[in-house]
Amino acid sequence: MNGVLAQIVEHKKREVEERKARLPFAELEALVAQAEPPRNFFAAVTNHADPLHVSVIAEIKRRSPSAGLIRPEFEDDADPTDPASPGFDPARIARLYHANGARAISCLTDEHFFGGRLAYIEKIKEAVPLPVLRKDFILEPWQLWESRAAGADAVLLIAEILTIGQIVDMLILAQQLGLTTLLEVHSMDNLLRVRPHVGFPHRSYALLGINNRDLDTQTVDLSHTLRLVDLVDDPSILVSESGIREWSDLMKLRKHNVRIALIGESLMREQDPGRALAKLLNRGYRAPV
Image (cartoon, rainbow, N blue to C red; front, side, top):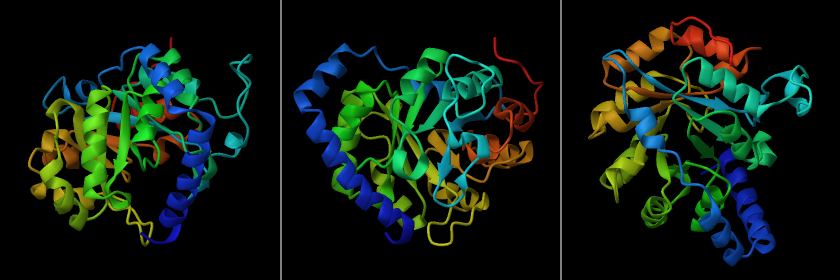
């Protein structure tokens, strides 16, 4: 690790310790016991309606270290009492995505670097019936309990910031908590490192993600997935992340048996992310009900 990723991880370590001090594990465990059962994220994205279908995990993202604020109006939160007010409104964005073909939602919850909040998960789930992935920098099991208590149905595990021992332990715990895991790799080396553990301990709780962003240069190249797909034992659980902007990109993935895509920034840059998703899926736009 180096650069921005290393900074994020160091900050996250301190942040998690602070959160743990404010919320003792006994209270966290009680919250999980009271939480509604998770929605089936794995089934939502792996069940395909037709041979050409590609499932889209549509991302709700406010800003990033590389891109900054995605749209100027996202500087402030929208007024929840005024549906027409400008600002960042995860529930409104989720409804747009749901109406226009998203199979699941990815929500950035890191606050310091991405402007997210853990509370956004609950708002999204109140707005739409789709399962929600907590996209954050998960470093230890406590965060899995926190994710489940907050209503997450799935969590992201980034191979570049975890040891194999940590990954295996968290795969087991996530399955026990009913959480789907999206185990993400950026490089061939990390794909080969985690490949023996993909699908452990239970296949129907585990997805593998290939992120097309180069961590050193921050450039994005969709062909990165296409170069690595032959090293994946089961392409049906493979998620291509980043760099997907057009219907033709989805068809390139489909030709290589990659049928799940996580798409965020290209949708969030548009004034109407739902319309952008409908165009990407080559379908007519639908306004949320």
